[in-house]
Length: 140
Image 1 (cartoon, rainbow, N blue to C red):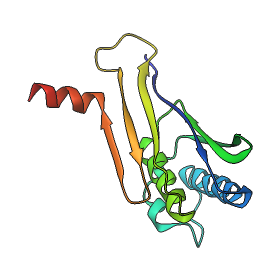
Image 2 (image 1 turned 60 degrees about the vertical axis):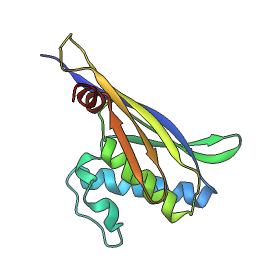
Image 3 (image 1 turned 90 degrees about the horizontal axis):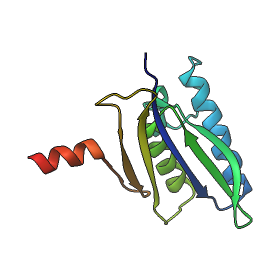
């Protein structure tokens, strides 16, 4: 049996410690919903539909002495992490785009188990691409 992984790791700078606390609490709530807890009143509607894909970790960090988040995963959650990042960009009126890449990997050699992708996220748009999509376009 083979184990499949989707890895990513990125830092997001936030405006202040209150934003960092909000983001950590929101991640905690979404993680609980993913594990079967009920959605709490006030949970953002734009994130409610992606909590089943909430398979990533969020930790407090800093970038050049400014509050930040470290988002990382071995188990995927690409759609959910993109929605989470966009929610934070909108909530805190952050203008800078967030970008990251991910990789698909496998513990055993499988012909369909490798690849990756990238995302560019702004407050108004999420653009993603996968290496699989790119290959299909090249063959079309």
